[in-house]
Length: 356
Image (cartoon, rainbow, N blue to C red; front, side, top):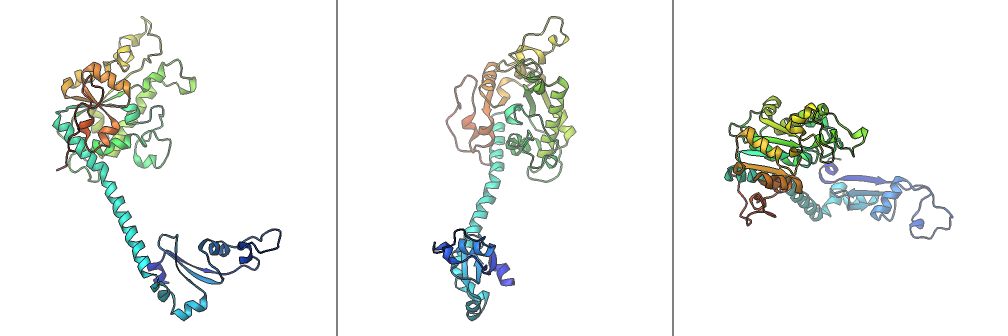
């Protein structure tokens, strides 16, 4: 048993059923209906066993047979170890292939962190002091408002709005925000040189969009609650204190949908920027307000964008932009940086920034 555990994926001792015979496989049976095969019969057919009973030794991948023999043949050969000796070269090759595959998987696991380090150096090289994130599409699903505050609470739930969206940005945010090593465990303080962070969102359009039905309509309070949960989720994923990140991130919500009528003169919300037309991208109101409150000029501001509306807003505000996948999933993000008014990446592709 110890030899099998160490050198095989598994062992099957197959016994024939009383009814199922190889005549069915050969198409020689005269019975109108085949009998119900046993598990041993099915395994025997899968691996091409000609006669039962049989001792079957399977390769580590579980897909190939290393050795097969009748009980008498196995005994005559000297047992399981002697049978395996016939297939040692194949077994060694399979183990080598599995080790190489595991090495590739481990290497790929480091790629996001390397891309994040490259992006962080690019931001430092460009003198970026304010990073504006378009929330819907970059940090969460556009429509989904189901959001767990921690990764553990989310688990593998498919309905969690952060999964598959914000997870792309986590390695870069760790580089930008977390003091100490980006790969360290536990909760760390914010970096003293962390850039200012602004989140711009149009989730609030579901408060006023006339095309949204009653079931999809949100209140202003509900929109702000989703925003609160998102910041806490980012803090949990990045490994910084939730309260510290809440104090560092500024939110800029747009509540008045472009499809909604303007607010009445008497509406008390009319004087608030968040309820103005100028706050809805492609208008640049959110970006202007973020730069105003952060005290950062357009030349030192970057918008992490999701679609053409975001890029149009960046153009109108005079700031550079870059798509989320180009910033977080490219070895040379500087080549993808979109300067104001450009139709695409504003520079020829340089060598990737190499993390020190």
